[in-house]
Structure formats: C-alpha cells, structure tokens
Image: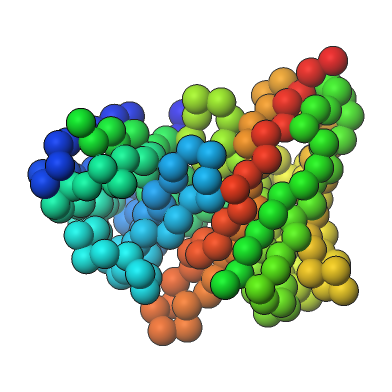
Length: 110
Length: 122
C-alpha cells in the first residue's frame, strides 16, 4: 500500500478535462512540494510537474498542478490520445525519511 | 540530452544478490544525485535510494539493510546491489537523475531510464 493515495483509474474522452487526486499527510504533502510523473509502460517515466505547479520546458500548458494542505491534484485539459498513461504523484516524507510515491492512476483516453 | 540505460541480469535466484548498472550519456554524473526506483508487478513506484557524486548515499529505510549504491565517475555509471533477494524483489528497476532546483529549492527526478525487469526465481 502506497504512502500517497491516488485513485487507481480515471477516464476521459478527447477534449475533456480530467483531474487526478493525490492524498497524503502532514509528514509528506503537508510539508513538502509535490511532483507528478507520466509513465507510458515500457518507456521512461517523464517529469510532468514539479514544485506543486511548475511545468518543465516542453510540457504543454494543458497540464497543471495544485496543492492544498495535505492533498494535491493534477489537471489535464483538452485531453488527447497521447495522454493515455499512468500518472504518479511524489514527495518527500519527513517521518519515513524517504521519497514516496502514490500508487499511480491509469488514464485511458476513450 | 541526458540518457540513462539500465543493464544487468534479468533473472536472479532467491537469496542471491541483484546487481544492476546504469550508464549515463549526454552529461556527466558529477554534481548530481543518481537514484534507483522500482515498480513491482501491478504496484506503484518505490524509491530505493540515491548517491551523490561525492559518494554520499541515502537509502529507503525499508531496504537499507540490503541495499548498496555506488558510482564510477570514470565510466559515467552508477550501480545497485540488493542482497538476499526474494520473490518480493521482482520488479522493473529504473535508474533516474535527481536534480536540485536552486530557484525553487525543489528536488525531482528529471531523467529516467526505460527500466529493466528483474525476476527473482529459482
């Protein structure tokens, strides 16, 4: 069981807006920044969002991140077929003294 | 463009030591943190640990007693050793670069390898 809780799946159709949640606690999300990764199985995971809401160069502005208290969210607007992937949230846990991840959310684009 | 490539045996016997190497191209391993992360079948990602180019390391407490990460700056590689493996260590193992962002004070994994499947079985 992962330290950070994500819904196992989400779904959307092209053009829709999807929100993926990530729930933690005061020892992790509550006191540290959140990062999001996109992973198409069989390929290298990709950095999507860092510092809660910053996009690396090359990541479309359709992707946005937010954090409030001990939870974070990833929003994908204008869903496209190439967004079909697994999405993971991550942060540092002060109690465990470890990088922790969510269990991942599988996003098919129907 | 920095690229990472994992290599090593795809099959390890129970109780033996898993050894993997990550070769880095397109940039030096100096002045960065280099990590190992794994994904067990049907599960999420698990951070194993990282090494800084000076040789300082930090490991996930849940694996600390069995893990060792080392680096060879002359070969631009870093390695993972996980001892006394069991079937629970069967996973896809990823190597990744952990970057410190001086502007935001944030850490994140900005480059990853494609991963290598390691199966623990007799």
